Length: 295
Image (tube, rainbow, N blue to C red; front, side, top):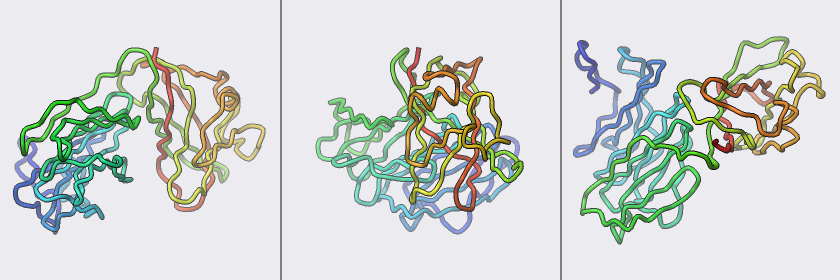
């Protein structure tokens, strides 16, 4: 059930009940989109996505099977998407980034019957905390694949909690640049994005942009060079082609932004414009990974 003040209770999803002894996780973005994640009676990770006040919403019984007596952890990312952490049926800890899940790595298993917690910072970096199997140590794993054994022993059956992360001043980091599809002009499919998309951020500079691979390598983003527009996407001299699975060079950043290390801040976001080249259906948005150096 989902309860909203002054509006009573609503059934969040249809057809898949929650497993006894487990708890749902819920988050809402600025657009009023609600997501609920829970462990259903078939031991599957199930999500329900709806607009506030419009229930039951769209229910998705994912392919992921959860370990007994465990519950998923759900967070809202700075770009308005949702990420999750959960204990799989083999006790491996998994992270689900915008619908693409994977195990954290070898040896990163949760103590049976315990659940991980996940949190993020304003730049989109995330960290998962969990009770490791065998030694009961509190262990963390983050979006930079850094594992830390705190050495703290967690009580039997206890689950850790983690709150919003505070980025350290200065130093390298990784953020998400979300490119959103715009109305098509002259056959080209334009996308635009900015960082930060909203809210505040530490000022910094971009050192590279990566177009992450997803399945087959079959798409390319044609970034518009400084002084040009998406109307010129058919002109190879007006764009920089970044194929799926590749990372920009310093020369490419200079061609796009006029400098090899473009800056960003809360009051002066980084803006990027590109055209999409790839098979149908064209995605409504594309998340790019930006390596940055915070000031």
